[in-house]
Image (cartoon, rainbow, N blue to C red; front, side):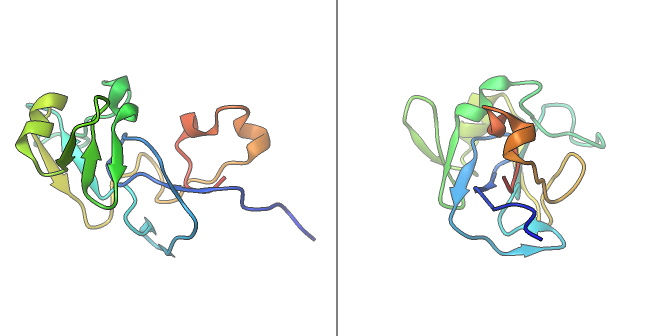
Amino acid sequence: MLVGHLAAIFRYPVKSMAAQPLDEAAVSWHGLDGDRRWAFVRPGQESNGFPWLTIRRRNDLVRYQVVGESQVRTPDGRLHDVTDPALAAELGAARVQKLDRGTFDSAPLSLITTRSAGAEPLRFRPNLL
């Protein structure tokens, strides 16, 4: 019995930044390879259990696009390495952190159907659509 078809694959190399569409992806216990492996730390939150800068706090993060694995294109077109302190300063972050297993809100892989997602599936930040 056919349950559905895979319409799209997305990864988010930097937590809360724009989706990166993929043609294929390796999946393991830690989610998609390269998904949410970088995250910016909010100032003064280095020891907090969830110190990450997210769309909930800064909704324009989704306008920052990751190119490849670690280059970030700003909304005005400038290109920075994800580790560039100037990028952290622009975002109002204390620093960026590389994460071996990624940083996820609840699970390492997010799947949503086109029917349940409606017209704007990327607002749910899925890996598999």
